[in-house]
Image (tube, rainbow, N blue to C red; front, side):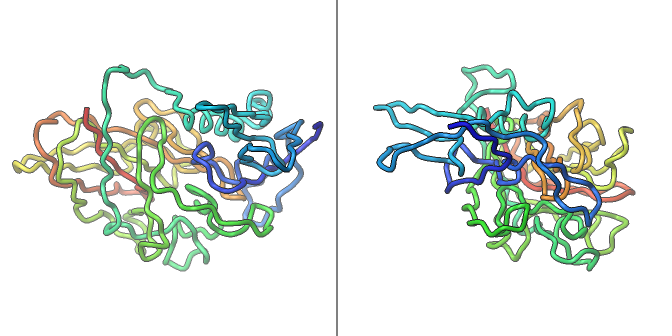
Length: 332
């Protein structure tokens, strides 16, 4: 049916929508100022929606119904009316993110891989080291979460669990995903409700409320690659390559390795969608006030994959903060 819809709402939980929040499905102008109201829509997210009978067997994924899955024997038909291709110029962040997540959730590969290569991912447990949550209730109280900037946080990552959409309307809380796949890499995100309210590791030398380095994080396995889902804080206007943090690897045989994490190479500020020379954007969304909000994925290639890694440790440089959200080992 014809329609000009500027906002969709997730309907329940479905793997096709993994990594997408209701914030991704509302296309509107958002200002960076903290007290700026949400303004008018920028472009219709759907110009047609589905008219379905009451006895349909379709699984409706959004309201209004612009995305649905029909079971056809052993296969399925996906009907997608979201204008993520047509709206790339007007809504480049949301449109590209929706398209990328839908395709990734359908199994599309975005990086060249040898199809004969078997990749196994084992998450690294960050729960003991985690010291901040994704949501910050009070700005500047030294308790966090995220970067302690109030609503300028990551409250819609990996899904919106606040109970409200970006306009303040009540909405059901989606289930927290057990795992996520970003750029072909499987990560396990900590549910803050099950870990003292802490879901990420925030470090900084000029912030007395967080440590400058994290305690050693146990790995206890061999790995070809150690993947980090991370970001910097405080460099959003800088494209200069300087060291933000350092990854230290402790092998079981006593040897160590140290790698600098450099702005514009392995990561960038979480408020900037930047092109990196070594990493790439793993997740991109918004927080209801600012878009984009970004987490970067980068893989440390282990020069000694035959030796077990005992632990990893992260420490910051001289400025601002480093944020680690998830880490995982890859074996091939």
